[in-house]
Length: 419
Image (cartoon, rainbow, N blue to C red):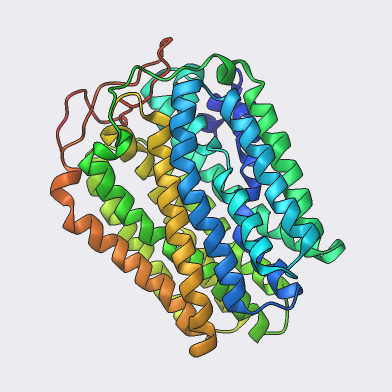
């Protein structure tokens, strides 16, 4: 299992790009956690915490596709680094001014969200110029998903550690400084500096003119909703048990489960249509979320959280391949930025719904939001099966100077395959 991943990491620039992207994405990956803890420390309610996190998520949803299209048009360094700096300044404004002025607090999180750099989509655009062939690119997608879960495992623990050592405000500042340093490492690398998107057809809809991509985005809105609601629900669960550390452990367990699932998924090559496989994986993901509504004692809840995360990384890795198959040519970064956007909007909806669910009902009600999100994601995939069965492009991965990976296919697929 490890040999394939080590082969990728030994490729020139690969480890630097992966590490820089993960560190650069720390502010975005931990923002909802940091905002909830910051708001509670400032005396704010769960509803306010959810609203601020929702505002951040919606702002990210607006900014990601716009910045992704800018990267496709103008290159990575001219967009990624300035965006990272502006996003960090937004969070610094919130940390330094607090919640004394709610309009200023909302403005700060909106700035931070809109300016979040599209590092995630940018990394996937770079893999074909760094790796050899479609097999390695496919495994890199799985490794990418696994690495994200490492970030989601370590990130909550890092935030809670910084909060315990200093304060929630200090946690916001430190995380965002690290984010700028990560983005800087990426954009100074040779692959990032020399990357250019493939020629694209001029169309105001860009990547969104693909019906299959729209179907996928609709499903992953609800996956984001599930994850966003768990963020608030886990804080409420920790409060119920009188220990703030419980929150970090639940989120770390969720990430650990996804890490294990992603490692297993990426260890083999899959034959057959990824769209069909995605429906199975998302169905299992939904089943994993439903038992969280039982809210058992902490040891059992930690185990349930780990089990709930097992199919998350496989779902994400499989969705990368589906995006590749359905995104129009020359929209590589934008297409993946739209995937991030749907997660952001879904997470915003989830946090906004879970806060009132706690206050009007119970902690179990907020976990029920996550279960409903997983079921809805599966329903969308089942209802749009015909749209997802007709990919826009199925050419092999391009590894030449074009650096366009829109034609990526999984091992087991041949060029021209129709689901």
